[in-house]
Image (cartoon, rainbow, N blue to C red; front, side, top):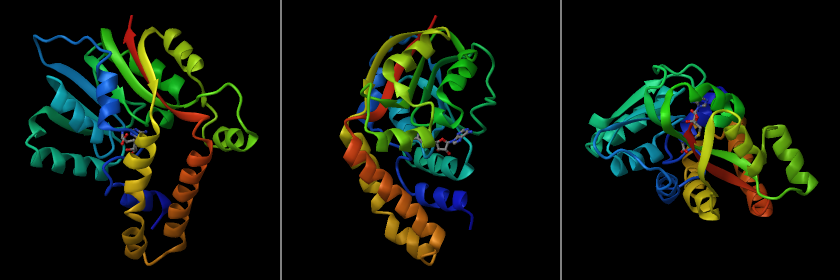
Amino acid sequence: MEELALIIDLFKNTERQGPGSQSDTLRALSFMSLPKDRKIHIADIGCGTGGQTLSLVKHTNSQISAVDLFPEFLDVLNENANQLELADNIRTINASMDALPFESESLDIIWSEGAIYNMGFEAGVKNWNAYLKKGGYLAVSEITWITNSRPKEIEDFWNKEYPEIAIASNKIKVLEENGFSLVGSFFLPEESWIQNYYTPLETKFQAFLNRHDNSSLAKKIVDDHTKEKELYLKFKSYYSYGFYIAKKE
Ligand code: SAH
């Protein structure tokens, strides 16, 4: 099995595929002033198995288009939505975030947790703007430096993994230069990384390794994620996900 298929197999059994939590989702939502007299249309981009999609559908009067590149994740979301009797308000769409199947100015909110890095923050902000109605909102979480200077070890790691990592003022500038004004932002707290992401992921490692006969590739994936967590614990005062909530001008 190739590495991508293995990663999908590991992550489709988890509630979240990146750091975050229901309280972060609701905190981001709290910055928006939304119409009460009609159903709004939200697109949740890079929804994964839909942890945040389910929080959003429960706490808004909305129709949600949940988009992901991998149908395996969308299958899990559909199953969970059916079980919770929320499926009427969620439509899953298998598409890539750089070619979204929406009409221009048709969305009230574009939501994206831990996913915009796949096309790059600036490219995503520029590309997605067109799909939002004027006055609509973008809510996006993106890996961000907390401090202006960092130890070389973590600087080198992130510059290799994701060279677009920057401090929050830089991310806000990108939003402002592309037709948005910021209405709120915050950093994800440690528990959104540890209790909500790394710890539940770790509970899946043994069964995952068993399923794949301890293959060297499966072991490498477990190893990479273990190292990533150790790095987080060592350098958590220098980076987190920033959550940015911005309004289209
Ligand atoms: N929002 C979820 C998942 C974040 S992980 C959460 O916070 O738990 C990033 C997600 O982006 C994964 O589900 C991955 O399948 C998806 N993804 C990666 N590349 C993509 C692309 N080009 N278009 C759409 N989704 C993509």
